Image (cartoon, rainbow, N blue to C red; front, side):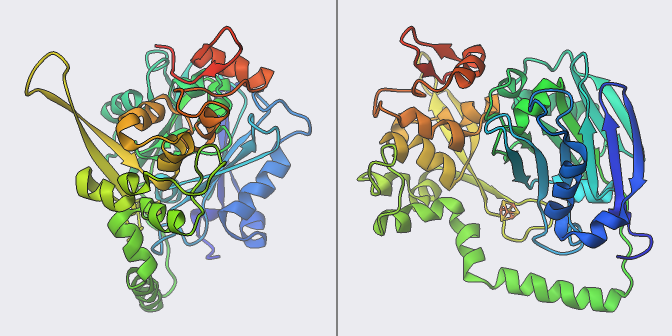
Length: 399
Ligand code: SF4
């Protein structure tokens, strides 16, 4: 590690006291491999044994690695926390601009502890942390809250906006955190940990530059990594069709999760394959910062208004292998039966690959149904959706 590398800076934020400090932690970044190693060590330091995952003591830790913002493909931030879904280690990864923004803001890791007494969002940048009132954002979905924060904060193009929707606010145990609208810390309920701290969003603006000891060698290695990535057939497949490309081969060799895992092939797979989505719905492709793969595929879904001929609303919905199998094949449903549902789930800030496989449990083809679940999930979901008198949990969100 170079002497002046800002990667060693760890930003500690206390939401209860509304204070922050920066510590140089070269010890961590020199000892552990990458952001995941450092985040795990920080979780070990900061998370007390037996702490409540939804209590103020549960820390949220974000970390990036030494290659982030210097080389292509190092585009992910890792989040570590105690999971409200499992009560165990919570590890979730997200791209968008999150990793590059954290690194270019001058940090290798961010540790957030405590809980705010009122809704708040953090604005981090220029060596400062601002605690902003988020009362007016509380209750908004993550699409709308992202739009409002974009208007209020400077640094467009160089910042990340990580936020929760209604599911996180209502402590749904598999709520996710959304970054740049189409990327997510999806797994293990980070959104609920945000919600328990009344933390609606974190904006990180990264405007600094990074030290490089030998620019010639740096350029040479950069080019090698870049060429190896863009010339790989794996990259082409994900660039052209995205992860939805996997539907057809998985179906062909009998590995496509179908009807709540009772089957491994789906008769309607060709109608929800990556090829079909690209042909009929693909509106644009996007990439996380510093990633030449650009695997993010956005469908332009045009829906007619029921009572006005020739008028349409168009929704831009990102699609991946996970929501397609979770909302489609696991429920035995073709795309026409799931139109727009993925967009609503993402708007609420739920992890569709965690929640929706459960919809298939014991109820193929009978609509949104989560199974009886345990008492905890019923309670959490009950605040977000509806509970049938039989005890079954429905997944449509309350307005
Ligand atoms: S664009 Fe796709 S491959 Fe590249 S970092 Fe983002 S999610 Fe990963």
